[in-house]
Image (cartoon, rainbow, N blue to C red; front, side, top):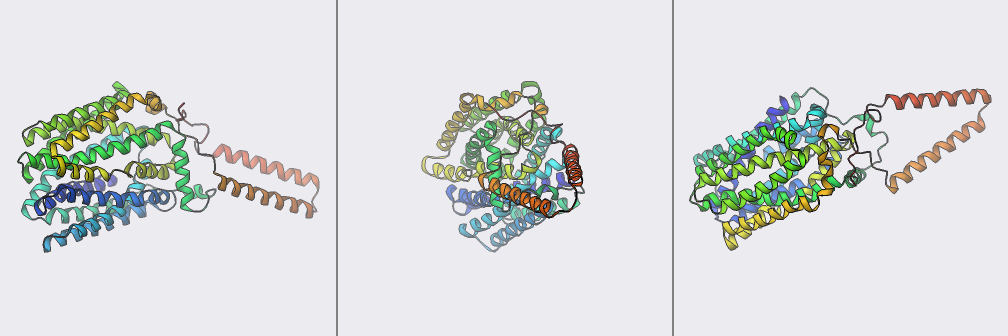
Length: 470
């Protein structure tokens, strides 16, 4: 409940400011490209700290990161509210504060998945993921009209609301009683340096065709969806809708997200993960195209609602299988590396969509995104062999084996072994004990090793089917 409430309130605040930022820029400058630059700055900031945050998530207290990072985001949004209150702020200042907020968001995001795995049993990951997305959709459902209302009352009010919402994340993290990790005993054999941790995450991803494909596919999907998020607001504005109409249309669209969160686990059980992924991609493509010729703002919201019903199960499939494939000791690094790669080009979505809308108009820009989305849907069939893991029920997916050590780690390990051997040889040379005593000591050490292997928690006896694909 602490996790649920804290992140839910933060998402509500983000939904409010997400509506307010484009409205602020549109009413101040009228340029969609400048509105996209703020979103792009926040995404770039997140991208910069994601990979480092993943290494930190497996090294330092995840609770500490979950406590401090939201406070930094709150300060940044509070300064935005202050600048807006004092007059029309410069786009450069807004970009800088969005970048700072993104830095903190990257660290916070990198610990979220490893922390969630400590709170929720692996067998319930898909349900928890769907419920979390449903919670976020409800927050956006409430936040969209609330953002339009607050912006109508005072342009600085939505940003102050978002700044205060981050306090709930900090309080929620402090109230979680369960240990969030990482475990200290897992650090014993780890090579020094976060660069080695990041490399481990990359090696783990390369072990799975599924992870490799979904990183590339997900990166392109995020470009399209982030671009459409900006164009959706612009399209409602293009059809004559004001701030209240933008909030209403967004709320209608988000009803689909709530429905998708409820129906997602059921759809996966009945249709299978692969069919859900493919069907969802084509439905989203169709809804993009239909919005171009939809005349009324509320109708645009209804059409987009259908796409949102499909978008949530799509995300549930990709995230749930990732959590099941990756061992806990590597999940922070792999999840952050995955998000880093996926978000490496995500910022270009709203920026490119804004420039396209300025150049050829909002409907034309939406049609460009529709064409790209159709190519992504076709890729699910063209590269279907890389998604064979989706034919395995989620409960039967086995974790990937830890990656083999790289050359540097192997050399370090070999040196350590050689030093140990030399030390043992020296001990035997200077020892005055009998051969019988030495043999007895060796047997005891062997027995101790066997006992240690048997007592390792769920590593060998309880391992699930491999995620490595042909």
